[in-house]
Amino acid sequence: MTNPLPKFRFTFWKVVLLFFMAIGAYSTWIRFRYGLGASTNLTDQFPWGLWVGFDVLCGVMLAAGGFTLTAAVHIFNIKKLHPIVRPTVLTAFLGYSLVSVALLFDLGRPYRIWHPLVMRNPHSVMFEVAYCVMLYSTVLALEFAPVVLEKFNLHKPLAILSKISVVVVICGVILSTLHQSSLGTVYLIMPNKLHPFWYTPILPAFFFLSAIAVGLAMTIFESSMSSKYFGRALELPILQLLGRVLLVVLLVYSILRFEDLYHRHMLSQIFVNGYEQHLFWVEAFLILCPLVLLFFKKVRMSAQGLYLVAVMVVLGFITNRLNVSITGIESSAGTHYIPKWTEMAITGAIIAVGFAIFGLVAKYFPIFPEEEHKREARAHAVPADAPVVASAMANAGD
Image (cartoon, rainbow, N blue to C red; front, side, top):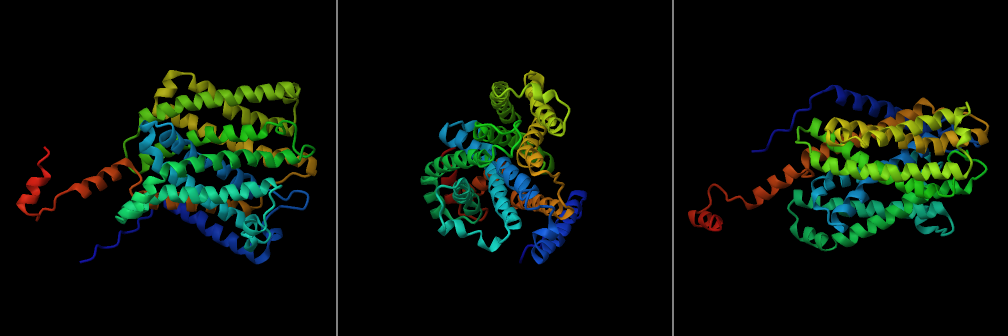
């Protein structure tokens, strides 16, 4: 007798996701049928827009929780964080996969995306980023593979992966460090195009530090949302620990940012009324406000306070990446860029697909501790119709 298929029930958020996927599908047809000119507001003077600024730069940053958490658990042996490693690795794996999908929309000839594999240019920063992202996506697939293998009881390949897990994690940390900072290095080749608020020789260090901060913030955000929508108990002690680490990272980032602006004599410029200044202050507010809030113990100890801080940190560094990739370039390009509706629709559809896949995997695979415990219980359970002797042996250790 086969189990009946689960019924699909419409909810508000499911309708929203389906709406974004539908207009994203129509925009995809326009993009690949009529090209970049018909589907974007990009020009020869302004060739990188929303798909590079948000989908790639922000997407890679938002997925940074994977290497941050796996390094903390498997290298620094902070076992307390272990319960949230799997959902964080899933988020990172989905994030990098969707970044690759987004690149297919932005490339003029997407069918040539494989060219860096065989046409190597080791003198190009983009070559390093492309290789690191490809290799790290492979590492994330290996880190997530145990979830799939456990689901289907494939014990031999699971044992092999377990033996090489530390090596895989170390490779992931190295690759992440390289490409997270190299994304900032890309903008060092345009000192005369990027606005001085954001052009700095230590931009790669800022990109790396912001990736760690957003990785921690996204883990807090994701755990809070999973607790709410999957009816799970919130791992508040773990989130409190992440909040303390986030405070340190934000403090280091803010001090370095202030020092950098001070030594480049830019502090007086941030008080001048102007387009770049307005968006700089939006970014500064969204980063400094959670930093100040985290100094209060009441905020660090409460689930609502940590959730608010995490959302502000994520929005703050998204604003920073968009300022670097769009706002800071507009003046030198002599144009103001506003994404076309099809660009926003495709970006919205990619995000919707990410949420939908996460929900399905969380529902059917053991990525949360409760599911792991159930799996272990099933593995050690004695069948109801088992012989009495076998049952007695199973209870012999009690």
